[in-house]
Length: 183
Image 1 (tube, rainbow, N blue to C red):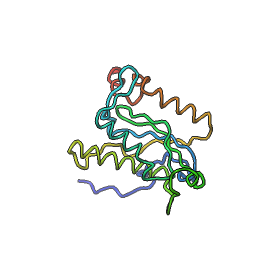
Image 2 (cartoon, rainbow, N blue to C red):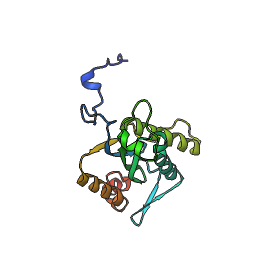
Image 3 (spheres, rainbow, N blue to C red):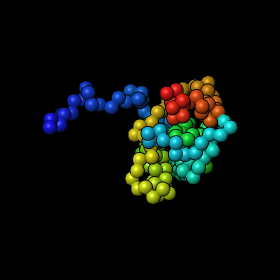
Image 4 (cartoon, helix red, strand yellow):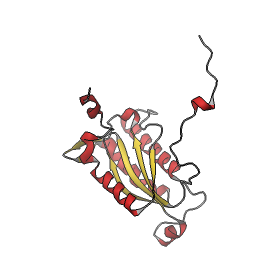
């Protein structure tokens, strides 16, 4: 048996998909995609260009909608639960906007997109695993995709993409049936 390989930072590092030096806690709009573990279709199905959630998909939806209760500086925008992934837009507000609105001003450390996504994955995984009686079984893939939305045009296009995603499921890269049909 060969000895275990030593850690080599040039070979064993995880390549970050984040913008180098960007502060993901700063006010702005962020497009997020989170995929189910092994891209398993856990959350429902698409029928007639519409996402139809099962009980697990409803848990995911509820956990997403609950995020502003945990993070007062967060507003949620367009969101969809697909059979094996979610797409959503998260708006991180500046303190003046939070104070001017109905939400309490944030206290202490300002949480950014990595913390917000981690919380969403943790809250939803815990509730899904309680529902399925499958403690500690991974629900989500380890990482997630994010995109910093930099313009009104970009925001409009991403909102449209999210809203039409169920209608595009047959062609979606995340659709396992698409890959099986091509075999």
